Amino acid sequence: MRYVVDTCIFNKLLEGVLDLADLPSNGEYCATHIQKDELNQTKDKIKRERLSSVFEKVTQIHLLTETTAIGISKIGNCRLGDGVSYIDIRARLDKRNKGKHNNIQDAMIAEVAFKNNYTLLTTDKDLAHVMIDIGGRVTYWPSQ
Image (cartoon, rainbow, N blue to C red; front, side, top):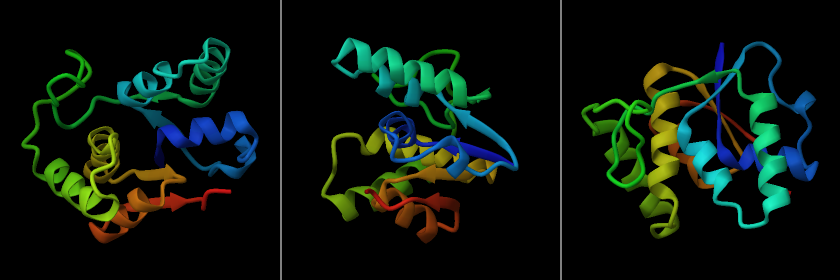
């Protein structure tokens, strides 16, 4: 079994809200460049370095995104894709949370899990609900 780790999970692990033992133990943890890019946007240098360390410790497999988004995707780290799932996921997220600024990234992360039949690990309620709505697999921890 493979799990796509949403960016918020790395933050919760660093904060001690979640422990590695809380994550499923029956598979491999995956991420795309999107999660790493989001963590690298952390302004506090020490926190950014700690998040990077958590990312490297947890993530075993680096995946390509299924869709290319101008200004976000990195050449060699994305597929062209048809964008159908991404557009649907993003539209559902926009409807749920009034177009939150990182819905593009969240939709791209969720699309990877959905299209590959992996389980998304998240603490993002809106993203979890969208995954359930589209028939994707998700493990959700309510924010604490």
